[in-house]
Image (tube, rainbow, N blue to C red; front, side, top):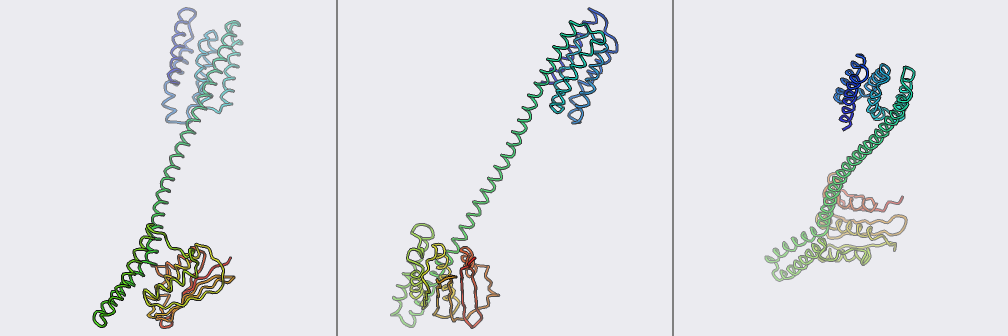
Length: 381
């Protein structure tokens, strides 16, 4: 639109100059040549500006000089001052704002200089005043459009930043959801390993015992089947608790000491494991710490049942300051901790993970043939 108006102004000046040349006095050939040169630069400016971003500034300077030269060659041809309208717009558009308006002021001073080369007073004053006002108006319009364009570009940049932030937030939400799902799966597998797996192991032992009894002591089959039924009910309860269909048992409901003694009774009933409980001190631990310590004891006793080859274990809970601790020991076959490792799987690795979650430290001491001691201790800053 801006270029269209500029072209119209130039065509209007050409038409008025042709009419002036017929009605008043002939316009010098030099002025026509300069007008033609002005037109060539005008109609090529858009294409050159797209190719060379620096081109508009020298273009404005050259076109301004051409207009001033034409005006001084034909001071009576006031229509030439209209060519400054588009140049005033471009000066504010392409130059810094203050410099653009100074450039417009230079146009007014140049028009005042026409009085020195024969411009008549009355038409000259009218041309200078109206021309200066029109140039200032075009500059102000350019400033308004320039600010509008700046706001548009800023809004576009903010919109682009917002889209980028939205995509990043969406990606983060997907990653967070996937992480939460993975953590939940890990928690569920760990809970299944710590509870249901041991129950299923005990059920397998009960089935094997029933099979042996069928051959050697048939009168004991009913006892083993009753035990198997109790274990199956326990497995169902554990699954319901893990899936939220039944209240989840927590040591805080009865206290950690009571929960450990109940665990010892369950191990004796299910696996025949005799667990001695020793509690020193009366300090109250937080609910999260109680739950983690209970689960560590639970898994340690599971390992005794599966791997130690003995039917006795000791659980010692130390609650006196400065450090609370839990230790589970047995006199079984033992193992080499360096070969088993503490990071993989859901046995020792699961115990270490639970200890780290509450800020405690897990230590495993064992040697082949010399039993095992698993100790988890509170870390005091």
